[in-house]
Length: 427
Image (tube, rainbow, N blue to C red; front, side, top):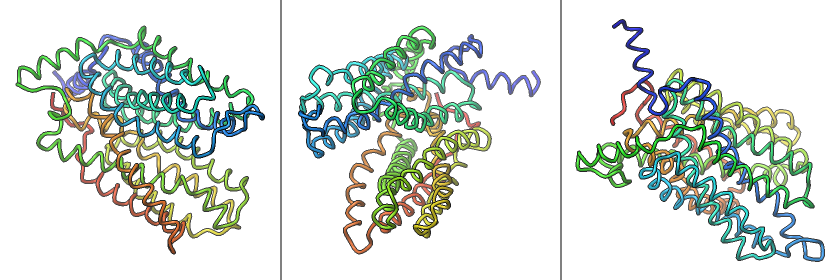
């Protein structure tokens, strides 16, 4: 057999699910999964739709909640993604990723609908957003490896980047829809987050290859080796250090990005004295930059290696530094740097593929979800402490300096992790 034939055979062997399917069938399956993934991202925008109505008085047609109550409703959702990641990762290792993703999507539909039963009930909103967050925690770890197992390795980074970039698209889409319908139609906006995941579950059922038998084979193979497919088994030997490394990397991403992004408009308005319109227009450029960056860095990861986008993480620190040197008169330059910063922040576009490939195939249902969402544990504790810096003499610039340092630390951690492109994976 020639070298070219061997290479072609090797690429085909990289496809785990639906080897017999045509590219068209494979792409339809990808789009089916993407429906769920897009509305997973979009669900995080629900607060934007409902918060104004929540804080209006009952006489004004609102719910009469305090601002603090609304913050508590949506803050609890982010925390709930962590136990959700663990549970649905375990479920994927037993039932397969296809069935688990369908269950997750239907749970998102049901729990997002739950507060519609009694919109003015604060406790019901808390329960609903916690359970929705719990379900949302299962999407990344099931959808991303499912896509990775349907395609050759040379496409996985691009596809993971497309999925990741839908968060930016969801922000743009959600903002436009909110602007069109407004607060008076908050319930219609809610239904745009309720109905589509159920449609996605139906599409996945009909068009995505079933990995149930493959999952059972992995369980059987692990039993023959005297091993169980669980988190304890996954974090053994070198994989313990890889597991710690990727959680630190994800934590650095969440912490550095959020500590800058969550405070950028406040910095522009309170420190530099810009108008809300100017600050908003500068911030929106970051979203467009991320949309482009996710896909460009994903393509680079497929061509040159999964670790090359770490350059973008390092450059993010440089972009934050330049951002801090500009004055209130540099609005145009702020927009340029915000766009470039967003582009650099797209470094994480291929992480779905990378986190899947870092661990043996038998742990594909477990590895990406905990590797990505595990970083939220770090940011959950780090961000409030970093926010306290604003009250010291360091002020808001002090928060940005910490963001720069954490970006650099993350890049260093990334460089220390293994490369996976064109590397054989352990079964």
